[in-house]
Image (tube, rainbow, N blue to C red; front, side, top):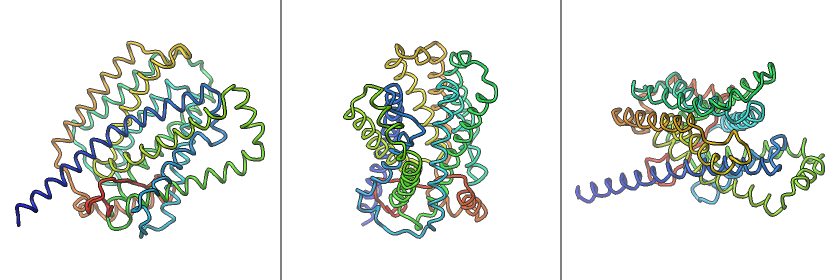
Length: 370
C-alpha cells in the first residue's frame, strides 16, 4: 500500500514541477508579448492612456478565468479586502502608465526594476520572510543590470524640472503598488482554506473591470467621438486591426495571470518579481529588433547587452540562493507566520496598499483548495 502512495506523491510532485516551469515560460513570454503589443498600439496612435482602454484588458483577462469551473467556488474572504486589492492594483497600473508617458521608456525601465527590490523588502517586513545573502546579491545585480539598460536614454531627456520629477514619483508610486500587491497576494494565499485562488482572481478581475467601466462611462463615453473615433480615424488604423490588438491583450492577460498566480502560490513573490525583471530585458531585445527604425531609443546598445548579462547573472545567483533555502509548504508557512504579520498584510490591503489574487492550474489539495 505504501508503494502506490509513494508513487502517487512522486507523480504529483513531478506534475507540479512541470506546471511550475510551464508557467514560468508562459509568464515570461506573455509579459513580453503584452508590452510589445502595447507599444504597437501606441505607435499606431490608438492607445491613449486617458481612455482607460490600455489597462482594461488586464482585468478582462482575469475575469475570463470564469471559464474554469473551480473559479465558481464560494470564498470566506471579506469582500472589502478584494475591492481594496483591486482598487490598488488598478491604481498602480494607471500610475505606471502615466509615468511612462512622462519619463520615457528608458528611465521607466530603471524605475520599474525597483519592483523586485520593494517586493523583497516588503516580504521581509510584512510576511517575515527571510532571504539569503545570495538572494539579496541576485536582486541587487538585477536592479543594477536594468539600470544599465537606460544609460543611453537618460541623457536624451531634457531637464523638465517639476514635470519630470513628478513623472519619476508617479512611476515609483506605481512600482510600490505592484510590489505591495505581490506581497499581499502571497499573504492572502497563505490562508489556504479561505478562498480558491481562481475565485480570487475572478473577483479582482471583476472589480477591476467595474472600476474601468465606471471611469469610461463617466469620462470617455460622453466624448466618444473626439476621444476614440476621431483618434482611430486620424491614425489610419483599421477598426479590425484595433479590435484584434486589444483582443490579443485580453487573451495574453488571461494566460499571463494564470501563470503569475500559480507562480506566486508555489514560488513566492520575490521569485515572481525576478521573472518580471527578465521580462524587462526581453522587452529591450524584442523592441530593439522591431522598433529601432521607428524610435532610436529602442535600438540595442553595448550598455543594454551588458545589462542583459547582469540580469541573467543576477537571476542565476538568486536561483542558487533559493536552492540553498529549505522550501516551506503553504501550510507550514502559515504556521510560522505570526498573527501580527497576517494582520499587517490585511491592514495593508484595507488601507490602500496591495492587490490580492492568485491562480493555479494543477488543481490538487496543496494549491489553495484548487
